[in-house]
Structures are given as structure tokens and as C-alpha cells.
Length: 324
Length: 96
Image (cartoon, rainbow over all chains, first blue to last red; front, side, top):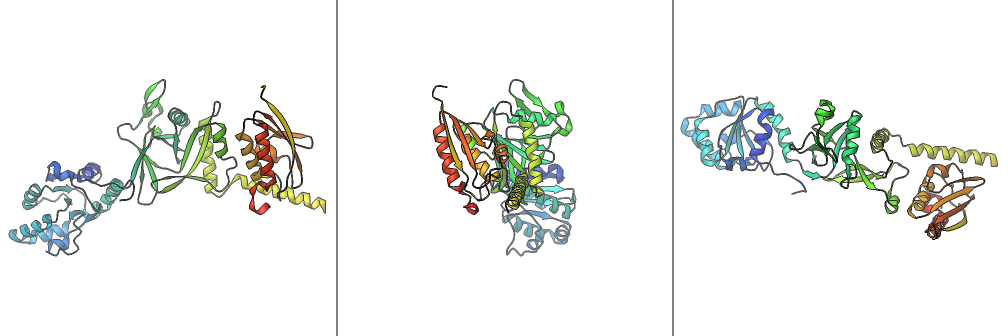
């Protein structure tokens, strides 16, 4: 498996989809059923399998019984229905979902409890369930990693603040909040690569919305700064790494800010990185805000140092003209 | 400081376009790496060798002479490296 790729368990799928997919757990309620993994995190309609044809049956996916499958099962004699459902459950499917809030067949309940396979009922129509479950499953299965960093949103761009403990990540975030920007996660951030190859940052549910400021303790961000000061998740557009300023680090510092930029790679995604030396008297909040403007301009094709180059070229031309 | 050394050298710019943004950046980087104060003088103007912006305003073109003064424990080292950098035409391929 590629680094950070996640195995999705049925229990996780249920927890994540309980509200958004309107699912309830009706049979196969054992812990083992929820511990099953979903090897292919997709939804599948087993119409053909129910007719008894199991070649190339996508048994590793969530099996969705929609209106057509339901009507077909209803049309069978009880013996035949039992036989077909037996065969379906014999394939070790991760779980089964009935859509449109349909009544689950007694045979299914019995089989589910016997085989320890979870059966869910969703209130959604089949097409909406398949559509929405894809998002939930993608979210659960996308590669992820945890990092000691603070994530903020500054003027619409997602900025990950990195640096040694105590260097001022949280204090910088605090200053940014005061100036109307928003916090995603303080000090500990979850990074996830989504289906569009974007890096998405979020907080651990347990610590979300809180910050620790040395000398004060914990603060609740929404109570202090208001509801708009918090974001659930945000795409990472740039990484700002704070370092202590020394003669050695001076060498590596960007002084010009040309077109080529330093990159920091997370989960195989390269993100533009700025390394900012921290020294007494440097206003980090202001520097972060300016860095965001700098990146926006660059994304729009404007690089300040190129304009300086152009001025130099003009000066050269003037001087050469005079010499002639 | 007792161990403080003060030394000066005249460096002649040989790269094609003189002390524009990129060479000034490389110059400033080297100057910032050592424990020494670096001053660059051209004509009657004297600026810090750690400031890109200030060095640009010297408008030093190819052939110009820069009087570079370093003061501090590592004055000699910084001058050696700056001299070598200028003589290598800042290692910029299209200005050799």
C-alpha cells in the first residue's frame, strides 16, 4: 500500500455516514461485523449476483439493495430468495445497505446475524446514496498523516505553520485570529490527500476549536473570537516554516523571491514553502499576511523581483545609449 | 572587540550585467554567513554588503570597482569568499 493509505472499517463508515447518509444499523450488530474492512471503498448494486451470476462479482464493495434489487428479490419464491441471499452472504461482503428506508427481509436479518455482516437501512434514494457514499468513503480511505503544525486560513488561503515547539506558531495564529483570519487546527494537524490530489488539513476532533497559549493555558477559539474564527477543514496552499535565525540558517534563506520556489512534500503533494527566520522584533503575523499576498500575486503571474530585473535592464540600455 | 580585524579589498565586477538583483542576492548571502560587518563602496556611496536593495542602488555595471571593507573576527574569510564569488562571475551561466 502507498504511504498513509487507510483501510476503511464498516464501523467507521457507519459513524461517518450516520447523519449525512441517514443510515441506521438494523442487523448484524456484533462487534465483528463493524470490524470488517471495506477493501474497495465503493458502493455496488449486486443485481446480477442476485440472479445467481457471480462471475466478476465485486464482493469487496458495499452491497446496495435499491428498488430494482428489492423488487427482484420480492418476485422470487421464499426458497429461491433464501438461496440467492445465501450465495450473496457466502461471498464475504463487507456490509449490505437497503435504500429508501425499505423493510429488510427476514432472511437477510437471519443471515446477517449468522455471518456477522452489518446490514444498514438508509432513508435516501439509491442514486443519492451511491453519490454521497462515494464522498464519505473517499474521505475515510484517503491517505493521511499527522503533523506538529498549526493550520490557519488567511485571506482565503490555507497556510500551514511549522516550526520547533515554542517558536511561536500558536502566538502567530492568535495574532491572525485577532485580525479576522480563521483557525483550522492548533499545534496538531491531520493532513489528508483527497481524490483531486489536494492536501486537506483538519483538526483532531478532540482538540478542535481549542488553542494552548503558553502562560495563559487553553482558550476556546469560538468563545473568544466568534463563530467565524474557526474552519472545519481547509486546503493547504502554502507552508511557512519558522526557524531560529543563526549565521548558518542565513545561508539557506530566500532573499529575492523569484519564480522558482522551495517546496515541501506531504503525501506526495508538493506545496510552496517559505522559510521565515524568527528573531526578536519580527512581526510574524504581518509577515504571514504578506506572504499570502506574495503567493496570490505569484499565482496571478506577478513576481516583484522580475520587475526589478526589468528596471535594471532599462538602466543598462540608457547607459549604453549614452556611451554611443 | 580585540579579535576584530579590519580589511579592505578592491573587487572588479566581471559578469556581463553588473550588480543586479541576482548577483546582489548571492553577495548578500555570503556576507550574512560570516561574523563580520561588510560594507561596499562605489564612488562616494557606501552601503551594507548584506542589503540587496542598497547594493543595487550603487548601479555598479560590468567593469566597476567595488571597495569592500570587512570588520570582525571573520573579516578575512568573508573577503576571500566574496572575492572568489565576484571573480567567478557569480557562477551565473549566461553572464560569463
